[in-house]
Image 1 (cartoon, rainbow, N blue to C red):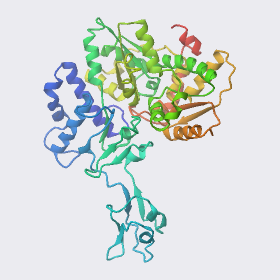
Image 2: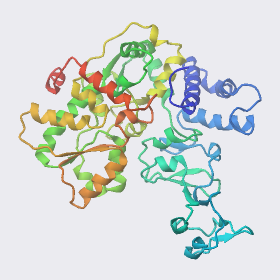
Image 3: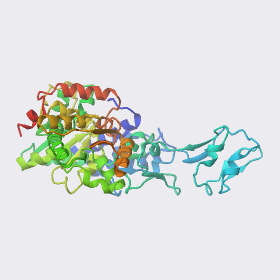
Image 4: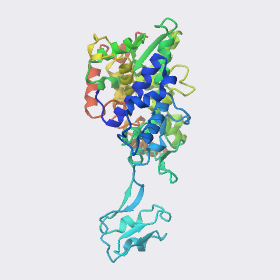
Length: 473
């Protein structure tokens, strides 16, 4: 068993692995039901009330692993029938209620939602409660709490509500930035991201060993903190064993963006980064008046993909990284011509195992396309360091005053200040995930140690400056 943070991730991986295995064999549509029997053998349920519900849920997982079924266009989806184990959200009275005589909670409730039983214990009528929280504030025993589900807590843009009809989570697509935080935090795996793993397999198979076209793998720099059971060079060899023509560092695209973005910043005087698609989407949905301040540069993924396709018209591009929002970015009209599909690291692991490729047995290949500064884009603060370096290397006389936003909450504060002309900065580095890309929902593992791995990977870069890295282009 590979290293995953949670058993939910492992279950998701098993579904992806079996779907991929059938797709390689060309038997996916015929054997889709057999996948359920492989993952849930026999008749004894392991996670749910009965094996029938368990298989019904897994059927939805298979659909999403195959690309989406009848779901909407959002990359992040709720499997309704899997989302019924969490308790009701909202204000509830806990066992700490002492049945006191003061009844302050009743007095403060303007909706008459609080009543008492024969033991003077308070109860909240959900049909009357408006979740104002006044009762919780006045309770002397802190016996009334606001119970939120893990998905709601993780969603900092408040895109998740609870459907009162079926008690399932519901995503407001107009607010969702598709960062995947809820996917990683849901303890039941009831929220997941659509997979394009079947599309990637089709791209590789139809290339006929790269004779019809060449399939490029663009790997995010955060790959250095993943697949810790093997060496990075073996991960690269594994990609070529899967059928990719070659592997290129998306960090080279980061070098290209840092060089161009530093110049753009000096010309405009103020800029917000455009590298994180979830951050850019957040500006679109919540701070649309600030859109003109977003860098006009495409993300490192799209920038490098465009360069490859401009120089090799016989190319197909698959981006591999930690980010679910990249899947949505690849569907944008400005990006779609350059990126053919997106995989997460979770999906790459499933892809290896679907072909029985043990990367630990492979000879190490070399991956060295980018500079130190392009590689550290993977962690919070890396983009700012790269932009600063870009100014230095181009000898641009501009005083950089950055604000580095580590997670969407910090992004919100910076953008709110800028919207009110109260931000003492001229550059906003926006990363929706805490820690930066190394905190992405599609990572195999998450944690502070990943930052150290990225910095170490950056120091190993052959090219020490941005100029050196992009000079080969």
